[in-house]
Image (cartoon, rainbow, N blue to C red; front, side):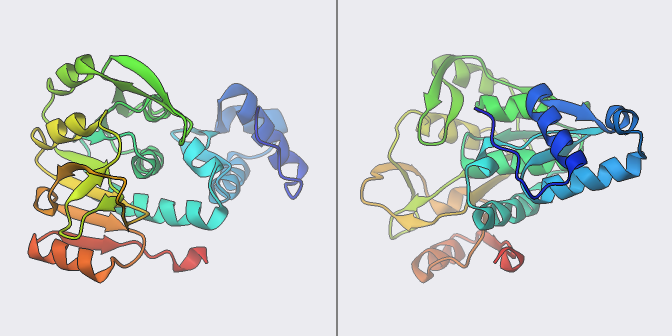
Length: 265
């Protein structure tokens, strides 16, 4: 079911949102002709809708916002966008980038789409690859394999041995890993065994690994070790790290960046 159009939108913006919901993607040029208005007016409409998490701007047009943003409270979605914008600053045109299947990586894909940096992106998240394919300057690659639905996040990912064999065909300039659970020494922990080997494999193939976290926690249920803090070249979060984790990152010489989410409050 498509999300309801907010009643606060004016008639043109409501119509634009409905068109995007049904078509998936619309261009500035087509909408300007349809509404008999200027392209600048349509750009302002896109900006208004994007700021509210309803659509994503991309080259020459706009498309539906990622499920990541649609399903989150406005304040948290805003905070996640700021984190993603910091992450995209690490990406340079011409790079080969790996994005894992996490919520934060999904947000990075949206920010990358808006930035229109020319690059190649490999991801086992089908939603990420589908959205990035709308850009004429981003080559989106899905490493083929078995597909499963991640019910908690309502997304589909590719997994299995075939995924790893295709992932190993590339050398990555930078990889982004969504992380949430840590032990008291700063080791990344995880509950699900399915993509631990994939994360570890990618880390061996990349020049730079950036950890992304919008929710840091010590979790007794997460008892599978992924990697130690020293495996990261940077750590981006949306709030100050707890002392025990900040100390672990400092000891591992990991640069920590905190996104300024004050405007989201």
